[in-house]
Length: 353
Ligand code: ZN
Image 1: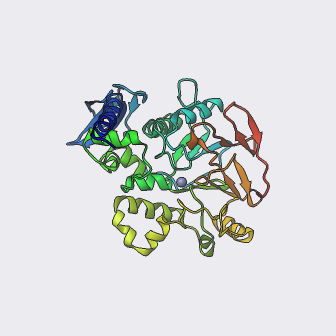
Image 2: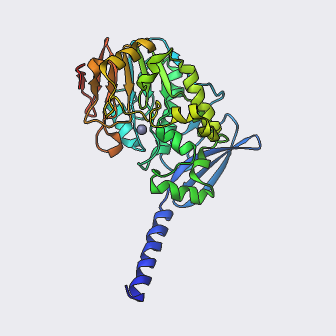
């Protein structure tokens, strides 16, 4: 390459970066500082900061996140909840906030304005809101808001931790959308520091569960390895181990923690779908040990929501991450349905894939 072309190429790259940075809008990122909350936005490439009362309201300065009420009290997510008349589950949003909203609107879980509309219903988001797509912050704040609105209406929204939550919170930023690298640069810290324990979302995420039992159904992002069938399953201990790891990533050196957060642990396991596959007997043993009818998982993308092991495992990652399709698993009127983007509900066939 001659010198002139080299200079033009460098100029081109710089300009693209400059234009990208100048059009960048994101936020709020909320930090706790000296007893105050400080909210930061990037508005068309410029940093904007506001002081917020500790449990105050955040009015939007720019971007897509509506007004927020900071939680007055941090409550640790439940490990187990009683059976409810209707629940829904979605997973692997991966930064596709607009598509998540479309799906929940189409299924009347939220209204046209994006507010909770499912009254006493329970929505479980089964991990991996972070990474790949460009609107993970909007999705996280949306779940945070729905959780408050649902609670006020007698319902509930729970976000479970997936492998990508664990990755970002422990500084593994390989799958971040490029937008967030630029946001981190403009805010002068690494992206994981925007979700440190001293931030509103960082503290909220660290209080979430990784496994949750709701009545006769167990939810977790990847799945439970057959080895869990060998002894009583203590959901609270699993959730506590993940929380401990998030506040102390050096625990990775502890063999038990390393196993739990690794490929065979609940946030990464793929053995219901990929070899070496769990046998039907092993899945039956797992269900018996967990005292549930079914395990609902995301993480391994399917064409559509599918039943495996005669309904013992339901795979709900129907590809939201691609930004074009996605489905919601709905339990209502005593049975399971695939909730589609066009508003239809199709009975889920409980076969063995
Ligand atoms: Zn995953």
